[in-house]
Length: 394
Image (cartoon, rainbow, N blue to C red):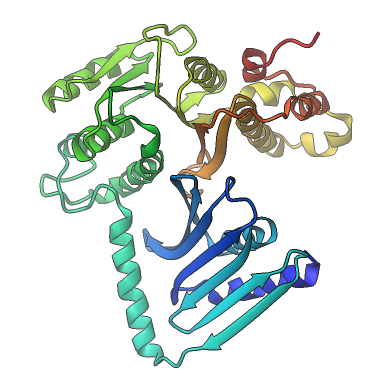
């Protein structure tokens, strides 16, 4: 695609991405196995305007919430690399985009005559409605474990100081919602949560899958803090969560099961994430959800003469190490036959540790070992996950 055509698309999305947007629909995929279609709509989440992209891959739908500039870039990329047609519907107008096989862009537009006051009121009502629908666990409906954990009052009102935690729980359940087709309705699904901690999200996951959705599940929470494990088991018994149990143990040495359907690892520190991911791969887990934390290993090892001007700044080196660590983890999972995405877990303003790696087993392995080893050689690193998953070079 020529630069001028790309700029034309960016300008169009800049114009349409506002509260007045109704829907964007991407169609005529150039590779239907990779992605069949995609849709986007605006949402108000915590008072912030975002644009939810829904990508349809086979029988699955994957969601991303994007800021405006992220959305402009992502939507332009979809038309540049994946789709040849796009329709934009707004309270202020309509547009259609056609992309030829050679990448030439044609845009047709029509304006809609709407009183601005009425349009603004309609946008606000619709977005408020979307915001309410976006929560998997609704505010106003008391959930016992959230009451005990101090997130909700007995009346179901979210405690103001815990609202970020409430949003985090719901965001996590959105990721769970996307992978439901990977879980069996015919048998019990085994789920392991490594480094479960106080288990806000473990209880939320169990409640959603077992109570709300009716899946047969067995959930195992694992952590190194015995007092935390004891407390979580007490709560599990209190709520009659009969197939949710917590155990004291280490990720690297855990051998309590032979088969696992889903592995969750949230804020497992440094190489603990690598051991959890390797365990998941070796178990043949269908789904992996991982929020990494404290990527010290790459930071200690990385060095490159060409990059020394940047690496002398500790903060930049730390951030580079974190990004490269998680990027390589994603590629190693692709190498093992997983379709892997790196998604934003919660907003940057709440925590810098906001990346979630979501991997769904697809079977076909990516032929990327050469590129992985070249990247490791460039930075002179030997990350734990690579040592656990890649065969030694002959």
